[in-house]
Image (cartoon, rainbow, N blue to C red; front, side, top):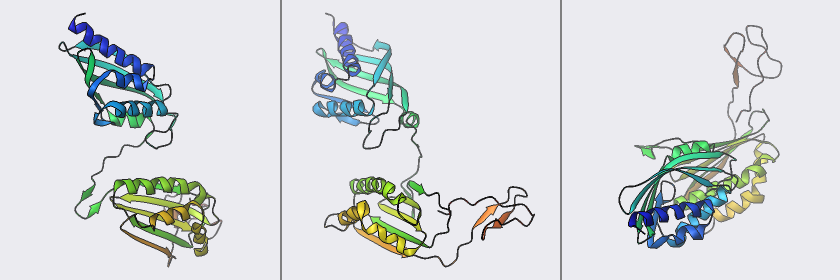
Length: 293
């Protein structure tokens, strides 16, 4: 067997293992100490870590397969392979719930072969394309500019359009990204419980650097007492334990003044909404207001 043929056979066996969805077979194709890297996995995965990464992808995409296109030898040892990764996200991906999105992601692998086995694989693809095909937002923000810290936000809405009678606000400063992730996952678990609580009007959660905020609107200040039980109470015990976070703030705020306005669909002017069945100064009825929070 020529060196070129052996190199191509190793690359072909590698893709066949992926298309069998065989994590052990994928990692077995590498030399001891052989490495794998791509824009999601990072660089330098070896041995069991390669198999674990592949297994995670097969969990997220049970029908995952690669359509291998142009494949060429750049030297006796290097294969350049173009591919299209196809699959449906019907399982969890890095802890996130499945979106049901279908991906057809183009990419390229540089496969370095030595003695008939893989010494390294470097995969290249556009992460933004992957995330957008999954129905995920890709928003590019700096971490910090001077005194301004940036981050994502999430809103849980209610069908109730009452004005808030109180706001419960929390701020937690965490010490690591791992703690921040634990709080975000806990917030996801709390949301279904929160939406069923009496007097709940809406919630906004914000992450900005190491600071995590929640702002929850209630019909009455007493409604917030429901947070003392259930999943929220479990999270409180975690946060107020010995080894979590570095600072925090909690409180119940009541409004001093709230003014609701909507735009008249007829004349286009802003109008205050007070009571029911109100009309704009132009004489036309005002549209129903959306939820206040």
